[in-house]
Image 1 (cartoon, rainbow, N blue to C red):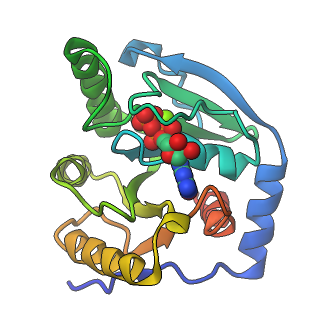
Image 2 (image 1 turned 90 degrees about the horizontal axis):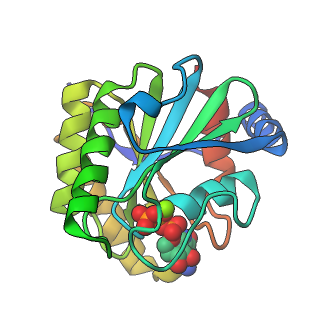
Length: 216
Ligand code: GTP
Ligand code: MG
């Protein structure tokens, strides 16, 4: 089977409206989890945001929710150190994950988050989609490949979201998108559409809201 990987088409009006309504409603922090035993009951659909430290996971959740500081974001890689659950209306969780790769934190602590992150990604029955964030400036790195391979093995559909579009020029943007698409062809669990975003300028946010609203 050969899948044509493309940029996500603009969502139709109904989906955009569903996304707008969903995210205009309550988005509330539920809990931060440091052990698998601490996960909330698996009683609803959830989507998570995975990616290297500093790629913009927490910022993207804030942009989706239209809130400045719902999820804690910062310029220090390793800001998010727990698995943070946010209830999006009554029937969905948004999940902010600790970053992988580089982090300014002690090695033993980082090793502990990484183990938790991997257990979560491989073993959460209600995880409908993992958004794997890739910085447009950096592209897909070896650590991203490792996470994508874990998601392949766990049969968790993942979708690549390129971040920080406001920071690159057109040539960098296009080259980075093309290389990411090439990397995705090797991954059976990759959803064949990628989304380009800027949490700063709002690009791609409406599309992502619509996508999350229409997942079942
Ligand atoms: P960890 O929790 O440490 O893994 O990082 P994270 O992936 O949650 O990144 P975070 O959202 O904390 O953002 C990291 C830095 O990138 C912050 O300084 C953000 O302001 C910045 N940033 C995130 N998204 C964007 C974006 O779309 N555009 C620009 N210009 N900066 C961004
Ligand atoms: Mg974070």
